[in-house]
Image (cartoon, rainbow, N blue to C red; front, top):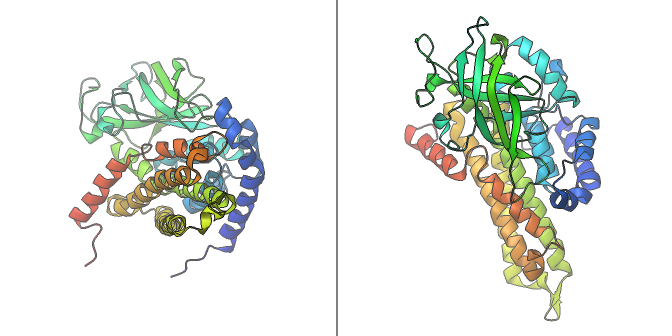
Amino acid sequence: MNFEFSPEHSALQESVRRLARDKVRPRAREIDESGEYPQDLFDAFRDAGLLGLCLPEEYGGGGAGILGLAIAIEEVAKYSNVASLMLLLTRLPTGPVLIAGSDEQKKRYLPGIADGSQRAAFGLSESQAGSDVMGIRTRAEPDPSVDGGWVLNGVKSWMSGVAQADWYCIFAKTPRPGAGGGTDPAARHHEAISAFIVERSWPGVEVGALDRKMGVRGVDTGELLLTDVKVPASNVIGSVGGFRLAMLGLNSMRPIVAARGIGLAEGALMYATDYVKARPAFGKTIADFQGIQWEIAKLATEVEAARLLTYRAAWLADQGRFTKEWVPYLSISKYYATELAVKASGMAVQLLGAAGYMKDHLTELFYRDARQLTIVEGSSQVQLGLISKGVLDGDLWWD
């Protein structure tokens, strides 16, 4: 059992760490206050070849896989979860294409993500359907004017990167394969959901209201409005009736979101540690008090545990092990690392005291950004349900 990175992954970690310190760290506060998309960081990631990290080399990517992307995201998230989200969005919408897309789809849509000439976003959730995936109401009806084509109508909500994207991976209700009649938005059988690639420039595609967020400001989140959008048969991802594809795509993303969590936890802990080492109190520094040292030690232990869980999950995902039997291991990484991000950022605020609550320090920014991570791409409660199901079904067992 080898716990060391390959030489390639070690070199990647070192190079991204330098980039994060030099480019990302100085911009974190400014991005949060302005809420403006950090195009300069996107350009820096593009120039460093980070936008195609997890994409195969034959489509212009770096071939570093999910583990490589997780390593890069961890380094960037130490200073900005906005910047780490930009890297995550190179995999979330492309995941279903990688898993079930045709060669034509991969050749058409993946190289643009890798070279930075295009951006994409992922549309699954709706205002009435977050964790309840089967509750989505966006529907796709067969297009009578085009053989195999579809017409989409609906509203997607809380889409990260919606305003910047050139194309979208959209999940919609479709008729049960082989059954007559139209699409029933209330249908709850798994064959009722399918995935489509929808281009921003197509008639009927419109960005709706943008959300006013508590944190992770800088990458717009909001609505996508779909009104009689005609989608050709060539843009259906996989087969019609693709609920399983949605789940596989999300399963494979767990370690990537977890990497955002451990990076944020590391950044918050490092920031607070530097502060308590320098802050005088009662004739010594705050760091000289045993109670403070214990809190630092506990968080450091949990950070290392989260790192091991996350790297294992990333390795599993790169082996294609994101089907049902592997879900508990993937969900454990996401649950533990993102809850740790909230815990570590909260403790960082506490260690700084009143100063930590003020915008003079990044601790309050870490805390606001961390709250997003326990909600997106499967809440902590959803992960607990998946983990417990894995134990009850015997997929996670020790005998």
